[in-house]
Structures are given as C-alpha cells and as structure tokens.
Image 1: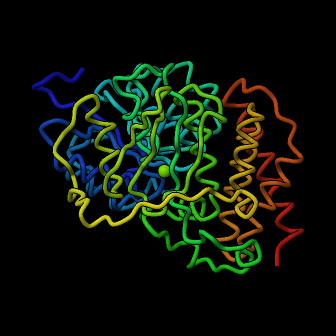
Image 2: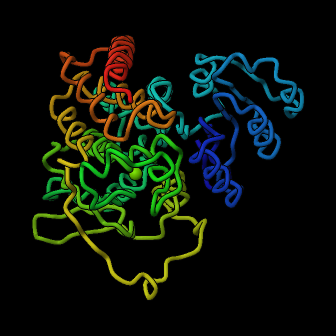
Length: 390
Ligand code: MG
C-alpha cells in the first residue's frame, strides 16, 4: 500500500468522461501523492492514449472491442498493455499495481467493476450510480467505511458531515438538490420543454444523462437510494431540500439539533480529490469560495407531483429488491429517447412508471439476475415508448 513516500496507484475507469477528465486534472496537481497506473474508456481511444502517455499508465482497457484496431493505439507508451471488451475493464481493477479504483463508468458495466474492485480488496472511489442504486444489496456487504469512498458531491458532503461523529446520534440527512433548470414550472409547462433547455443545468457541468436526470429530479431520487445504502439509513431518514445556489452540498442533522453542512464552490474536483486524499486534505484543485460574494441561500421543498421521477425513484427505493434496477434501466432508455427527440420530457416519467407497474420485485441475489431484470426493463420501456411517442 501507499506510504508517505510512495504515491497511491490508481485506476481511472471512464477516463474520457466528465468525472474522468476532472480526475486526471486532480492527479496532475498531486503527482507526488497519486499516480495513474491503469486507465479504461468505453470508446475514446484518442483520449485514452493521450492520458496513458501523459501519466505513464501501464495498463489500458477499452470496453468496446470494435476499437481494437484504432491506429492511435500504436502510440501507447512502451510497456503499456492494452486489452479490449467489458471483461478487460473488470480485469484491470485486479492488477497488482492498483491500490484504488476510481469508477466513473456509465451504466451497469460500472456495477461489475465496483464488485470486482471490492472483491479484490482494493479501495473504491465511486462515481458510478448503478453500483449502489441497482447493486447496493450486493456491494455494501463487501464495503467498509474506509474502502468505499463516494465521489458524488452530495455523498462526499454527507460522508464528511459524519466524520468524527457517532452515526447513531444522527437525526436525519438533508440531501440538497439544485432543483434543475425547471424549478417552479408546472406539469403542463414541463410537457413542452426542449432538449437544449433540459441540458442547460444552472449550477453543475456534467454529462448529458445525469443532466437530464437532474432536470427531472430523477437524479435526486437515485442519490437518496445511494445514500440509503451508503450510510445504512432508511429512505425516510433522508430529507430532500432544494437549495438552488448549490452552495450547500448536503447536511447531517444530529439529535441535539445541531446541523453540520458541507459548503463550497460547485466544482466536482473537490469531492473527487477528497475520495483520493481521505482522511487527509490536499491543496484545493480550484479557486476558493468567497462568502462575501455568495449573497443569499434559498431553501425550497421539492415538488414530487410535478417532478414525478423523484416520487417514482423514492418509491422504487422503498420497495427495494430488483425494483430500483427496473426503474433505473427504464430511465436510461427514456432519457436516451428524450435526447433523440423520440419522446417529450414528461414521457420520461411515463415510461419509468409503466415499467415499475409491470415489474414484480424480487430480492437481489446476483449480478446475472440484475442483468436479466435490466434487459426485461429496457424491452418493456421501448414498448411503452412506442405507445406514447409523439
Ligand atoms: Mg450529485
């Protein structure tokens, strides 16, 4: 393991995405403390090769095997091995020169990588939502407080608000939401919003899927399910509040009425870096907050009747078992359809609701079982899309 003199060796999965590139930027600033030995992307071999050369990686993996013969791969650094396909990404985490895996993969491929990471006894810095939303019942028995470190800003905030405290003395978690670009709109107004409006997030810069999930508030429901697994609390222990400036990244309220909040600039490099530095703190990767310029902080109750995806996700979390898997797969299909203009904005929650109504939840037993539910839910979602498409 990494000591004082030896940098921690990390694998970055999903290195070309939003979290991945911001992780590379954090590492660039702290090369004395952390070194990238392994990189994985789905398809962006040009960015993969660029990063492998810059950081001197020894292993790279490409999830989509059709990129095996990309010419750019000839420019990988000497001694760097390249492997292809979903199994290759999973095998990367088991390499002996990897101490920590930062998992920023998209979708359900991330669950398998998380599972393999913890099984291999490595630390997991988790940015992949499906790992806990879909596979929390499989992942959490393998994890400890020191081996599973959340990267998402809210969960990093909650983790930090718990540090040094007795979790049994916590009264509730305040999970903050920005409210997205459509805060205050009516259901009728939502039906006609356009893709570019939904992609214009007011405070955070993120990939398209999570940006749409933020606009529907589905993302907040997914985060509540993640927090329920991560911190071992019931969903009703978690209270969601809209904080439109996104200055407060979440809070923990204790029995005595004290509320500990995590505040800061809206820059994902801070929680990414904390997942690497924990329990220590390294020099900030971004400009500091100036409270004199923050102005006011507002708090608003979320509206789950207008933003149906929030209500549906919380319901899936309460039902548990394979229901969050069906819900999440349906959402992925519906968001892709919305981005491609195949359904309206409120079509997203119609699809999710239809799939959930048709799913009989079972206790989670295996990744293979979750894959079957995922396949079934996607087919069902496509069928519902045909019936509602405009
Ligand atoms: Mg978040």
